[in-house]
Length: 252
Ligand code: NI
Figure 1 (cartoon, rainbow, N blue to C red):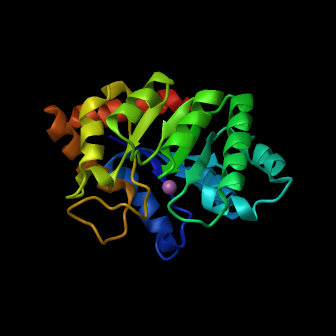
Figure 2 (figure 1 turned 45 degrees about the vertical axis):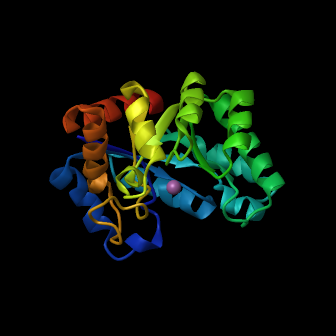
């Protein structure tokens, strides 16, 4: 059983074969659940459509840090109405990205905070993107204490422990299989199994041995195998724990 807690099937990389691929994931690869994460309003609307079309797809709506400068003054209200759907189970992906400068830091922070406040008000978890912004991300999470997950976790073991102490989950994906992956592997080994979520970030972050190809949820098996190997347990245990954890967090 595979539960992919973070994918972007609204992405244009799936335009040619989206329907074919999505209808095969359950029967061929036993993918029982996917959270499709929006990055802006167009993808949030597409996420809602995918949720209506496929039983096993759930959605997160939100404004990605890259898109915050483009977001309008009243977009919080739009977000709230999009979230009013029983298959929208999270606010995401939201957060801070200081690696790229698509949006100024103060605007990123403002949107991160107001989307967490909205999630808390709606009693929904958040799906957090943190790239090279660990300190500010932790400060904001500590201030508002949302439930949720830090996806594609790239912080240290200490930051992972802090995140877990806040009651949050750690999302791990293809990065743990990369040759130069030292910190994600340490994190994969250290965290309690009941706080782990597996994810792809499809179409990106394809695990070894398929790097370079377009990623889809079936590739989670390679990430699970790697985590099982470093923890000295069975792959099935990792997959099952990640499924149970995702269902618990997202109320599925
Ligand atoms: Ni993503």
